[in-house]
Image 1 (cartoon, rainbow, N blue to C red):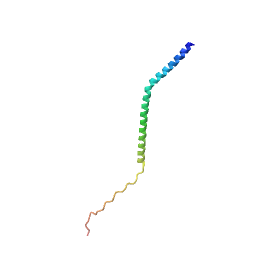
Image 2: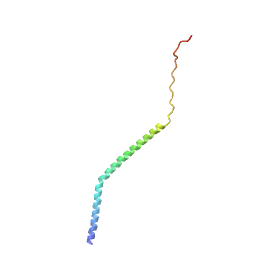
Image 3: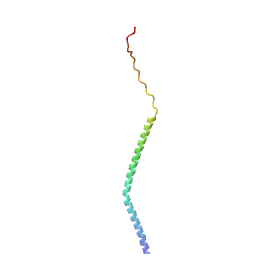
Image 4: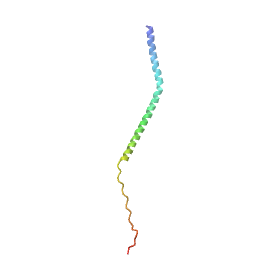
Length: 85
């Protein structure tokens, strides 16, 4: 009976030690994951802004253009001011 009790105590202590070891080993990796997620979310935001700017540029280029206003007419001055006989 006492052997079974010692086995159970060993399993409990071992599982607690294993959980602590795993959590200490993965603590540094979670920080890296948070920074990676932050970098990726910033990149996604930049790409969304770029997409909106490009959509506006496409709309501006696809919009039909008005006919340009004509130039002002120049005053006509006749070259020959002499009267013909």
